[in-house]
Length: 186
Image (cartoon, rainbow, N blue to C red):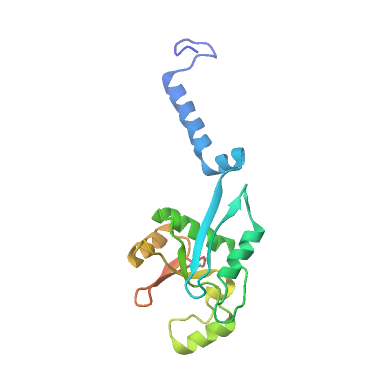
């Protein structure tokens, strides 16, 4: 291929660089990679501090969520007080995946509170003014977390930087709340 000339096959250096750049960007974008190879995956790791359960699973692969893994996550993130299991919103899992990536950690998220039944939420509201009447925990859309290898201020800062939902900071209780509701912080 000539870089000089006037015919339809002539390619300038600038044209070649632009074409190469566009091809490279497409080749390395996550969705292009996922659709071509099917090997793009999302994995999460949890440790429920109340039950001692630990889990690390790929929950999304080949462009879809894996139902049996989603059910396993629902179980680990259940209300530890009542044992009630509820579906955890997939966008919350994606938020945690993004948060883990932002923090560049392979450590499991320590789960302080995942799903919370209406009964548990009512009980906690009686003990603390910091528990919302219509908490997103009751919808499987919120989780209270910590990480062994990151400080709470680092965790909070990373969660805020994502701008994907609510972020609550509870340093005295040792956790950060994240949810997939409206973007806000407290």
